Length: 434
Image (cartoon, rainbow, N blue to C red; front, top):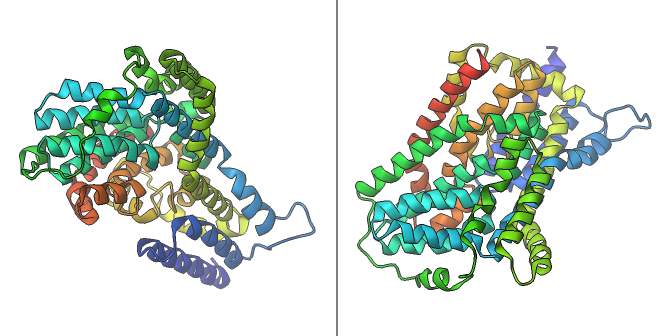
């Protein structure tokens, strides 16, 4: 690497570190930091802003315009996934699942916590945006608190269920198809590697914290949601409660892609629930769903811009030598790197596919890393991020709603999630280095 390239590499690294600090301290939101970083990276590397030559890679055409469209598959999946989630909510499927879970759990705190964890995981496998987290949380958290569970455990149940649901949520698989260029069927095929250890560790956490000081004797001041659960949508058929898992089954069993699977799932939900005004449900659900994921869509546009920036020939030439030096070439190195560094997935860090990790992953693959290895590492580390990250909007909401310190959630969960990451990475190493 020449002296000019060395200076450019230092400049890019400095911008990277400054951006991380600004995002961690909430001085600059991620939705702005990512596209700004993409443009600055390209400028430092000498990518021209415009060119009369149509073949020249430019900031205007390739980084900004093409980058904004790069995550189109993921954005489409996000929109239709949110639409599907709103349909389930509007026809009463979501509340019916929670009602049934409450009936099955009885009045034992541990039974309630585990049952709501399972039920919420199923719901979040269909839709896991902030709107759905708030909808589910405002129903199940007061019930858990009234049953004697502590605010911390109640928040944990919601966050752990969301993490499990996201793992199986087909609308979220689109981000990996766009970033690592793998077909959705391949992403689906490896889902159990990040999922099973997460489920096992989540159940262990719930049991441990419930039995060890995880109960609260004080009353919950908020009105209980049982009345809402018992009275709303009471005519929803039991068979309609299978609706959330329909898209997942279609992708796994029939190898369908994301959008058709969600369309079929939505149609089945409408047929099974038979709402009085199905057209109104479908149209209003789409509008509400888009509003729910507007922030995530903006984030994906920023990710696309950052991806196209780091894939610019000038930027890639500068960064690839650094990336090649850290690409694991053995199972042990693979396990250690992505386990020890897993906390870098929080605060939109370099192992967060919804942040800087998307660009790092693209560079790793272009430098020779197995795309499946990169995909598995990102998905596994995303489990830690989904539960622990204080910058997650659902973490902020859960902490505020339960009056729990958001950093306490991080401290109480990160050790457990690192164990989950380690187990998944060990299994992944056998798959990648077989």
